[in-house]
Amino acid sequence: MRCYKCGCVLSASSKCPQCGTDVAVYKRTAKVSNAYYNLGLAKAKVRDLTGTVESLRTSIAINKYNIEARNLLGLVYCEMGDIVEALSEWVYSKNIKPEDNPASSYITQIQSNPGKFEVVTGAIKKYNQSLKYAKDGNYDMATIQLKKVVTQIPKHIKSQQLLALLYMRKGDYNRAKKQLSAIVKIDKNNTLARLYMQEIEAEVQAKKKEAPSTSFMPKRRERIEERRPLSGDDVIMPRSSYKEPSNGAITIINILIGVVIGAALIWFLIIPSRYQGITEEYNKSIQDYSEQLSSGNVELNSLETQLNNVKKEKEALEEQLNQLNGTGGANKLLTAVISAANSYIAKENTAAAEALLDVEVSSLPNDTAKSLYNTIAEDTMKSAAGELYDRAATAYNRSDYSEAAEYYVKAYKCDTTRVEAAYYAAKCYVALSQTDNAKKYYQYIVDEFPSSSYYREAQAYVSSHE
Image 1: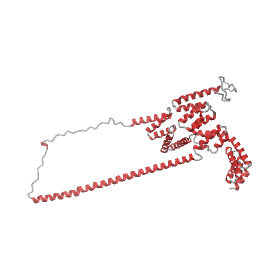
Image 2: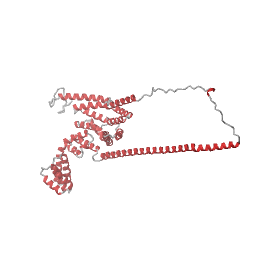
Image 3: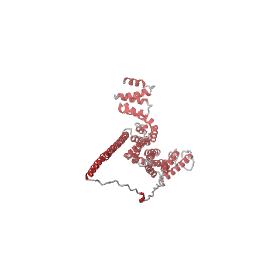
Image 4: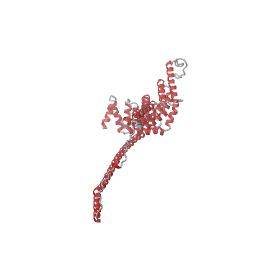
């Protein structure tokens, strides 16, 4: 163990043998931190990643200089699909110990594959967008986006948790179980995954109890009536009234009358019923066609809705692609922050500040990247402004107004309280005949520095170029 003040190897004494600093409390905190690190390492070996993160974060909170805990925490974050958080821990670790630090190789491996890093950052953007969709109640779009994230980063536990929750809300417990099982394979003791599984089991059991049972329905008894066969006494034979015709003419007349009566029966009874059957069949056909037409209209409306949803998703993806490919893309912003961190670790404060000049901190994808940006900016911007101002003055004295304007602008961006940087930037743009840029920096003086000695000149120039 080394002294936190001078770096000397500590002995059993409570004071540093070289600088005499009291290190008793430091030793105790370091031992507690190492105990939590060992606990986290034991949990990581059995793939209890959630417990590992909790133990390692406690270890770092107790002793922020625990390099082994930071590096292991970065590896666990990487295993859980949180690449940005892993990079942040490794950059902090490298800042604390620049030499002989495994974090350097971890960062190099990430930066050596920019294509994969771009896929990861794009998937994280999709996860954030799906989280917003879910909060706004647009659950279908959230599910579509999360499926893509899980396909691109199979180990991203947060996406799988949210996707399982959406499946549970929809009642699709089989798919939810599948996602939760995938989480448990990565992180055996994931608290949320276990809790969701318990909820699913409770819901399934409740539905089984509510379902009506049909196993013991009473059978219908058929009652058979006993029939007694008829005897001869029960049959009443009617008296026959048939008489043989007296001659053949009457027989022919009777036949003709029968034919006429038969034809009349066919015309008045059978034909109308036939027409009625045809009419009913025709009406049924019309009804079937109407139902098919209604079904077609419903299907058409459903397809139009799906088409509109696909168009919205396409527009959202195009917007994300434009953001990633543009100057404000999350991938380029993170790359700029990492570049600034590398320069900051190498004690090149001016280069670190210049790397952050075009980074809009509010556009960074998460709080960790924003915290890293603020840490570097606070330590480098003021000193970088002075060095850049000196470079600008040198170029201005040799009448190189283009180079001088560039450095004056950078100096002003690094330290917006330097009114002289804005003033000479405007003077350089006047010499270069760039009226709009000159007016822009004179306007800064008018708006921000009304008590400055440059105010009257700046106000006169702005007024004369309106």
